[in-house]
Amino acid sequence: MTQRLLLPFQNNNLFSNYFLTNQLLQSPEWSDSEYRDAFQQINEVFQREKNLLRTYNEKQLEDHFFKPIFTILGHNFEVTERTRSQEFPDFAFFPDENARRNAHQFKNTRSFYANSIAIGEVKQISVDLDRFGRDEYNRSRNPSLQLWMYLIDTEPKWGILSNGRLWRLYCKEKRRDDYYEIDLISLIESNNIEGFRYFYYFFKKGALLPSDAREPFLERVLRGSADYAKEIGEDLKDNVYKAMKKVAEGFIEWRGNQLDIHNPESVELVHKNTMLLLYRILFLLYAEGKRLLDLNNLLYRENYSLQKLKNEIRLKNEGPVHQRYQSINTSLYTRLGDLFRLINQGSESFGITRSDFYVPAAC
Image (cartoon, rainbow, N blue to C red; front, side):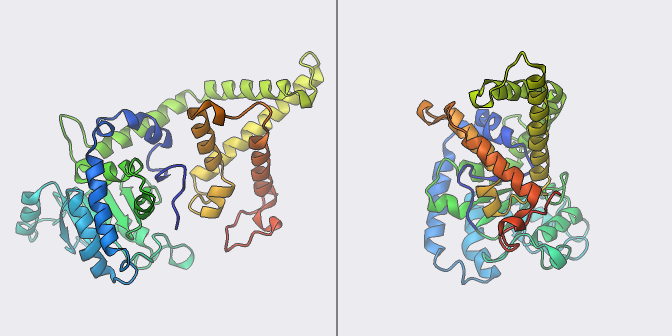
């Protein structure tokens, strides 16, 4: 599996993408440079083990790959202790060594996980982290469900799931299929040290602990994302009005449309098509946000999705002037039209097989 090129993470509704790519950059963590040393250390682990990763069984992968990385991330961990329902997560993470030792001392009188800060489950590198169809609700065959059930069965709020390449964060206060994901191996192979920040500061022990009178990093990101979503919701009516105005102005100002703003029929035509375009975009935002359109599918995400289009627009607008869109360019509208046709007619009508991805016809 290849990670997307535009962002170093895949955020599946756990946090706010806008918060991750904007407000987060103002956090104290983003001003230090300790992630650089961690990148080099984890890179050394990867270079040492990369030729064997696919040959290791799960226990060997734990010993030679996961444990060294968790140590670099500063974690105090214990392995395979039972939960209340007699299940055995691969890892329990603790705030310090004393807490880990005390968990053993009191495990016969209380939950072993009472003072842990997260739990972890790891798999072989070839294992898919999600299973659908008949295996979706089989916890022994669906790693994401297995990790979620461990969270429900133990005290920690946060869970880490990984197959070595993909690393995910889950939060029991969110939905089961909400997660934050990093393709660590892609970051290493592309020498993306700056993108590595999105791995290091989210998966290190310090992300789960308060520091300098501040709440834990992950809690700040979770709360900040929720606050941003609430603010956006409160401003939605005003934002929709502004969007309508911009789209309507675009239809009118595009000379090829030959519209007369003083003609009532032209005004009505602009209004109708403005509403149609905005409703379609809102539908796509909802469908991709709720995974009705599968952003986990690389082919859909990188070639068709509205998310890919949004990220490209953001990067161009924030980048050098010579790379920004010009008024003569209609490629964005053309790509939107292609996506609308895909949704309207369904993927199979364009010869796309279900093994690639599937979008049912809307009509």
